Image (cartoon, rainbow, N blue to C red; front, side, top):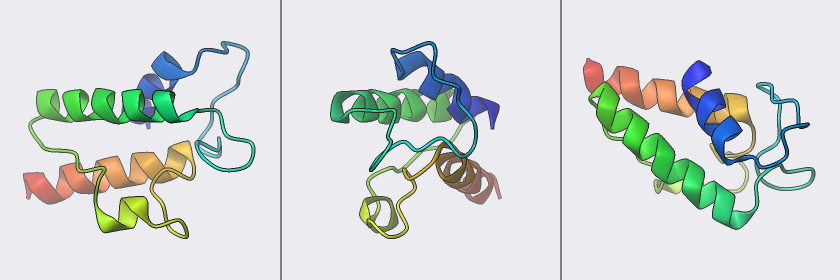
Length: 89
C-alpha cells in the first residue's frame, strides 16, 4: 500500500489527516478535491512508468460510481497493484 499511500500523502494538503486504507478519497468525507484527484492520478501514472507498467485510471470501472477505484486509499491501491501484476505476467 506504500505506493498509493505515499502519493496520496503528497497531494493531501492537510497534514493532520490520518491516512489509512479506509480513507475516503471521493464522495462524502473525502480528503481530495477534484484538482488533487487529477494530480494524484498523474502521479500514479508516473510512478507506474518507473515500475514498468501503465496505470489506467480512465477505465470504465474507474469511472463507475458504485465500484470506483477512487472510493478509498485501499481500493485504489488494490487496483494499482492489480494492474501492475496483470501487466507483469
